[in-house]
Image (cartoon, rainbow, N blue to C red; front, side, top):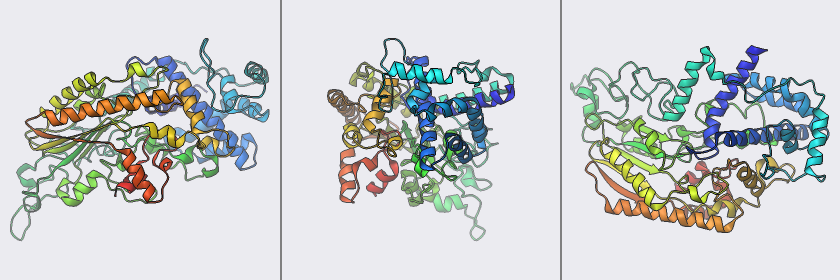
Length: 541
């Protein structure tokens, strides 16, 4: 049993590492216990809800629905194994509770995955039971009191302390924290491995044993003997003896694209099929291992650096693909240096992962797009945590000075403004959330309130019923955008031109309406916060 428990802990740790940074902005002073407990509660309520709804959709027992859910999960990353282990540990109690019409909130509080701290409000997703909460909870506890379920502890000793896991745990943590590839033999910040900050995030390395061969560099001796910049062009034309790189790329002014962004830039996405029982099938979780090892981001499909077509067959029109279409010498020259929870305040912690050599590399187009987390956080009182215009000015100037010392001459930097996030509440609050669609019992207003209560909301201040707070947040976002605009129009740098662009989401909404769409379709349905990049890109074409 110990070995199985270690697998469960290791896999759970692996799954939670990316989840720990995605649902709420990163914060150095975030209380870890409260933060972690909130995500544990949220995960429990979501999973129990799916189990309950699978039983309802397929008119089956709770036990059969748990078996069905596990059967849908892939073997990779021990996901299926972990699911069966969880069923073995908690299944009997879940069956008893759901069989007595206890909802997911009651189940998770009974199993202590959710807790109501003294003096804190009761966090719940679903409508409260008709009977008093304390009475219902005590009744549920009596049901599982004599359960044969083994004792467990979610605060068990850190699995990463185990000798055989310590090294890989450290590397995974470092990968996520520092935004560098997990697998990079020559340490040039490029990889032949797709996920874990590999070539889904930046151009694929063409020679992982040669630190001087990587995307974006100027060709070494016109790449007569080997492909030093990984654009696939090298060798000599036997007809005239001219190197192919010289023939096709000389004078074409190659440019790479580099994104400095947050979760929106990384294309954060949770598939609705993962939590919607009526849509769930064997095909639903095929991409889950990839998503987990990419921190639930999909940079390979993003609007800035995407190079693959979306899984639903829609051809992406990313900036990188447009640059490559215009000039094939730009092949593989992209870097998505985005991070869930990133803002102007913490960019310096991973900005140094940017790969550009002033002497050896081509110029680049750098997009700064921290579009939310300077005004968004999950705190109970989010306003004091917002970045002030003065602090933003200082942060941006520090970033631009760093870029000026690392970018080749002839580069360009574009500062994106912040959107007006009031469209979130205005367009979603009265619609049913995916977990509430089957029984018409949970709206986005309920979902937002649940996240805010747990203090794990990606943006309490916009995802709130408090109109005054939403308005104040938009005013601060406008102030920060004006600060960015002021910097772009007043500051000059030796190695790049500086520009500013508004993030006018209202203009996107109007264009979407003209095409017959509804504004709510432009927002990710599961988190209710991020732009639905697929529809936004379609609208911008």
